[in-house]
Length: 79
Image (cartoon, rainbow, N blue to C red; front, side, top):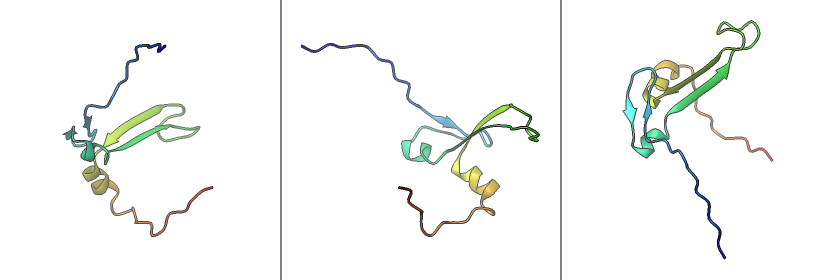
Protein backbone atom coordinates (compact mmCIF):
# COMPACT_ATOMS: atom_id res chain seq x y z
CA UNK A 1 0.00 0.00 0.00
CA UNK A 2 1.26 3.47 -0.87
CA UNK A 3 0.75 6.45 1.37
CA UNK A 4 1.06 9.92 -0.11
CA UNK A 5 1.55 13.37 1.27
CA UNK A 6 1.33 16.76 -0.45
CA UNK A 7 4.48 18.83 -0.66
CA UNK A 8 5.01 22.32 -1.96
CA UNK A 9 8.32 23.07 -3.61
CA UNK A 10 9.50 26.52 -4.59
CA UNK A 11 11.61 26.80 -7.71
CA UNK A 12 13.43 29.87 -9.00
CA UNK A 13 11.48 31.11 -12.00
CA UNK A 14 13.83 33.97 -12.87
CA UNK A 15 16.71 35.98 -11.44
CA UNK A 16 17.23 39.75 -11.59
CA UNK A 17 20.69 41.29 -11.31
CA UNK A 18 20.82 43.70 -8.39
CA UNK A 19 23.26 45.92 -10.28
CA UNK A 20 22.04 46.26 -13.86
CA UNK A 21 18.45 45.04 -13.48
CA UNK A 22 18.78 42.35 -16.16
CA UNK A 23 16.21 39.59 -15.63
CA UNK A 24 16.83 36.06 -16.87
CA UNK A 25 14.60 33.02 -16.93
CA UNK A 26 16.71 30.86 -19.24
CA UNK A 27 18.19 28.06 -17.06
CA UNK A 28 21.69 28.14 -18.60
CA UNK A 29 21.91 31.90 -18.05
CA UNK A 30 20.41 31.67 -14.55
CA UNK A 31 23.11 29.24 -13.43
CA UNK A 32 25.74 31.87 -14.22
CA UNK A 33 24.34 34.33 -11.66
CA UNK A 34 26.42 34.80 -8.53
CA UNK A 35 24.77 35.17 -5.14
CA UNK A 36 26.58 36.96 -2.34
CA UNK A 37 25.30 36.53 1.21
CA UNK A 38 27.20 37.63 4.30
CA UNK A 39 26.90 39.17 7.74
CA UNK A 40 29.23 41.96 8.80
CA UNK A 41 31.46 41.02 11.71
CA UNK A 42 32.71 43.03 14.66
CA UNK A 43 34.26 46.26 13.38
CA UNK A 44 33.10 45.62 9.81
CA UNK A 45 32.66 48.58 7.47
CA UNK A 46 29.28 46.98 6.65
CA UNK A 47 28.08 47.12 10.25
CA UNK A 48 28.35 44.63 13.07
CA UNK A 49 25.74 41.88 12.60
CA UNK A 50 24.14 43.46 9.53
CA UNK A 51 23.15 40.86 6.91
CA UNK A 52 23.55 41.55 3.18
CA UNK A 53 22.51 39.67 0.06
CA UNK A 54 22.80 40.29 -3.66
CA UNK A 55 22.42 38.48 -6.99
CA UNK A 56 24.66 39.53 -9.86
CA UNK A 57 24.71 38.48 -13.52
CA UNK A 58 27.94 37.21 -15.00
CA UNK A 59 28.40 40.42 -16.99
CA UNK A 60 28.34 42.61 -13.88
CA UNK A 61 30.66 40.28 -11.99
CA UNK A 62 33.12 40.46 -14.89
CA UNK A 63 32.74 44.24 -15.12
CA UNK A 64 33.23 44.79 -11.38
CA UNK A 65 35.74 42.07 -10.48
CA UNK A 66 37.17 40.78 -13.76
CA UNK A 67 40.45 42.68 -13.35
CA UNK A 68 41.01 41.05 -9.95
CA UNK A 69 39.95 37.47 -10.75
CA UNK A 70 42.33 34.95 -12.22
CA UNK A 71 41.64 31.49 -13.64
CA UNK A 72 42.74 28.49 -11.61
CA UNK A 73 44.74 25.92 -13.58
CA UNK A 74 44.03 22.96 -11.34
CA UNK A 75 41.42 22.50 -8.68
CA UNK A 76 42.35 20.98 -5.39
CA UNK A 77 40.27 17.99 -4.34
CA UNK A 78 39.36 17.53 -0.74
CA UNK A 79 38.92 14.06 0.66
